[in-house]
Structures are given as C-alpha cells and as structure tokens.
Amino acid sequence: MDDNKSDDENREKPSHNPGNSKRLKTEGEFVEESSSTCSNTEQETASTSTDSGFPRSRNSKNRNYRNHTSSTDFQENRSSNDDDYQGDDEDSALHEERSEDEEDNLDDIEPVLSSTSSSNSTIIIDTEADSDDGDVAVLAILKKEKPKHRWFVVPEINSRQLGASSKLQSSDLFQKRCYGSLHSVQRLELMYKLEGHDGCVNSLNFHPNGHILASGSDDLHVILWDWKLGKSMLKYDSKHKGNVFQTKFLNLSGDMHIASCARDGQVRIAQVSQEEGLRENRKLGCHRGPCHKISVIAEQPHIVLSAGEDGIVYSHDVRKSKQERLVTVKEDDKDIALYTIHSNPLRTLEFCVGGRDELIRVYDQRKSDEPLHTYHPFKERGNSSSFTGFHVTCAVYNHDGSQILGSYNDDDIYLFDADGEPGTFLHQYKGHRNGATIKGVNFFGPRSEFIVSGSDCGNLYFWDKNTESIVQWLLADDSGVVNCLEPHPQVPFICTSGLDWDIKVWVPSCETDNEMKGLGEVIKNNNKNRLNWTSRMPPDINESQMLWMLWRHLRTSSRRDFPIGPSDISIRSIVFDVDDASASMSSSSSDSDTYSIPTGCSPS
Image (cartoon, rainbow, N blue to C red; front, top):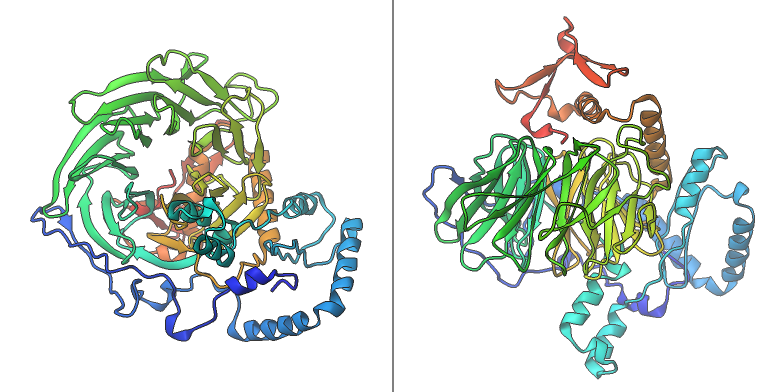
C-alpha cells in the first residue's frame, strides 16, 4: 500500500465483504438457449450461482487464478502498512531522501525497485540487481515514467450528481472515462474461465453489442458464449478441415452471421438463429495456403476481407458466390505470406496488411496496385533476402485510424503515425517475447489509451501508450503462450486465450493494485531467450522455430501427455539443420522420448 495515497483514492477503495466477494452482477439478462436439431450443433451449460451474476466455477482453481500473496503474508503486510500510514508524518522525509539517493546512485540500487507518484502509480518490485547488460536493459524498462491517475470514481460520481462539469454529465462519457482509466487496468483480475473447447483457442471476438463472445479453436469448432453467465449458448462444427484461426461477427440485422478462416485456407460464413441454432454454413472463398486473419468493415457489413499465406487479399461479399481479388503483395517479385489484416475504422476503404517481411502496407480497395503507405521501425532496410528477418505478426489501427500498432517476431511492438515516413515510429514497447506463435496485439480503451499483448512467457502485458511503461502484468496461460486478446467494446473487460484450452475473462474487480513481483526477472529471461535464439538461428526459420517451440512445450507440459486419436504425430527427437534452416525428425527406440502432438497445440 502506497503511503502517499490520496484521500480520493482511499474513499474509492471498497471495504471487504465476505458475503459479496464479487462486486459485478448481471441484471437478469438471460439468453434463451437455442434448440437446434442439427446433428453438428451442441449446447453446453456451466453451473451458475444463485446469489451472483457470475457462475460458480467448475473447480476451485478456476477462480483466483493468480495467487498474489498468501493470506498470512497479506495480513502481515496489511498491519505493517497500517503502521507505516500512521507514522506518515515521521517517515515521509526519510522516504523522500532515500528516493533521491536511489536516483543518484543507479549502480547501487536496492533489490526492491518501486516507482511511485502522488497519484498511486503501479509499484514494481524486482529481486535482481546485477550490473550486466541484461540488468541495465531491464532497469531501463522498469524505470520508465509511470502515468498518473486521471480518473477517480468518487469525485466523478459526485461531479455528475452536482452537475459540476458538463463533460461528466453524460453516462456514455462517464463509462468511456472509466474504461480508459489507469485504475481499470491496474485492478484487472481473472474472474473465471470459459471451458468447452478441446484444443488451443486461436480466436476471440465480441459481438458489436458486447453480449456474446465467439471463439474458434484447433478442435475445428466455434462456440458462442454468454460470457456474463459463463456458459456456452451454441457449439457448432465450423466445417473447416484445419485449425480455426479467426472468427468475426458481421454487423448485420436479424440472425447472427459469423465469418471464419482456418489453416485449410477457406473463408466461411455461418448463419445462427437464437431460436433454431445453426441455419447455414457455407464457403465464401479459399486461399492457396493457410488464412490467418479476416477483417470486417463497419460501413460495409456484407464485406469480409481475408489475407492468406499465398500473399493475396480477397474481398468476400456474403451476397455473392465469388470472391474478388484485391491485391497480391509482392517484394522483389516474390509473394509475401500475410499473417494479419485490419481495416481503417474511419476511412473504411483502406486496410493494412503485414506478414513475412518487416513492412506494414496500407492499401485502398479502389486502387490496390501499389500501397498507399509503408511502415517499418528500422533505420536501414535492405532487400527481402538480406534484411534482418524480423516480420510482422499483427498490425491494427487505433480507434480513429490515425495510428497503426505493429508487433514483430523476436522484436518489440511499435506504434506508427499513419502519416509518418518509413523507418520512423512514435513509441516502442518492450519487455514481452514474441517468438513462438503468430501472436496478436491490440489497443485497450475507447481512445486506445493502452497497449496489450501476450507473450511466450505466458503473461499478459499492458503498456501505457504515451509513456511506454508497463502498468499491468498478469499470468494468463499455464502452458506458456498467450496469443489472443479481445477487449470488450463497451466496458473495461478483456478476454484472452493461448495454448490452454480455455478462455480467460478479466475484469477490474481486484481491491488492490498488482505489485508485479518478479517482473524484472521475467523480462530479463525474455530478453535472454530472444538474444540466444536470434544469435544462433538464421533469419528465415519461422516454421522450424515454431516446431521447436512446440516440441519444448510438449516436453515441459505433463498435462498434455494423453492420447488424442489416430491422427496424432509422434515426435521422438527434433534435429535442426542451421545451414538450410530446416527441421528434420529422427526416430529413437526409447518410448520415454515419444510425445504426441494434440490437435490443439498448433503453434501457428
């Protein structure tokens, strides 16, 4: 607990009430389950609590996923903090003197690093303080300026009641200010897990009204969730023949329409009725290779854009039977495999794509022969065969299309000005690791106030967009990789998924800020692993890299050690040929070295 906490924040903190352990409730918004008779449609219901809007979890480990401290340590820290607070007048001068000494002597920094402000910024505690280059890099990340709190619930409510400010009288503005506040990010905690898939969950998407969540998985199924109640409304066979990579709601009236893409290259559309269940599931088009991402357009609700590893961007009109080719992305007459596509929220005819090179390209649907703009963060750029080997795994626009966020494999996350020049960027966000999978990145907040990304270390990272400082850090995947991040369109909730076979719902209900203990050590390990990998592997080794990461994941994850079916692939050992950047399998006679790849562990 920060000794310098303001009075407003002290009034803001709710009292602990064992009879009301969760403060968020639904207001009787139940959705009738569909009674479809289709053979490929299933319905599942999670147990729910009668005294709360949130479901009682299937087992105890589903709640309180991240164990911050033990109850004993919590009581001790609480009592000691109370004593410190009572002696605030006596200790404040000593505290300020110690802070000045630490800033003047970075080489002699104490094992505990704390960054505080008068507005109770996040406290970061680390146990490592060596003098090598790795620690210097970690210290530079942890010492970035922390943002100040600009939203306090009690004063804002009082101002609305008294009419003190016209900016605070609108309920919509109040909600948006709450959503985009530092308080909402720092109080995030796991509420529950949505369980129903039999494979890694690769895709999450909220319906535009925010009531329903759609998820796609390696088990080839799509599930529609009533996420507030924690139960599945409908589970249907996607008809894809490979891992489902993305699902998107189309903002059409009447029945729900869900577009999906997969490893088989197909782009499909499903029509779902709440009364009848799945009505239709048909193919819109197909790529020559995997299709990782699709994009929908608000002003053109019948259009779905898709980008595939064949380097082609297609436009699919759900009213037509034939797809339209918009552009084939090339570099030096070589097709560029595409991993991401996103539409500009305001200039809806523009879209950005990224893939197996360092460029983020922006095109216009009306004239897509050449890109309108290109972005990359590197000062010098060679040709595609001689450059660094970094490539784009995800690129998204901010809320008004003025900025583009790009995540690079085995590199950092960069924020670009939409009107900027190639080789320039606005901000760089460090600390995570993006090496094992085609990892996503996203904005959080109605005005894109924060940056959020998963990591190979299994943690969820939040950065303040302007200061680049890490403001939240949460363990979000037992198996070690967080891939998908889906913020709610109206309220400060976020859903995540990765190699685990569930979906985690995070809400700002924690009563204290996260101290982020051990963050420095994790960042140091991420940087070390990135350096070790890039120093000994050739640049163009993406497929081998993913195979190796998958094998390592299977070796260390005992809970995956169970038979899946006759289609399993056995890995006895993996040998990498660095010269030709290929991976080969060699058999061993030892049964103890045999591992099965479940359908739900595809890394890309």
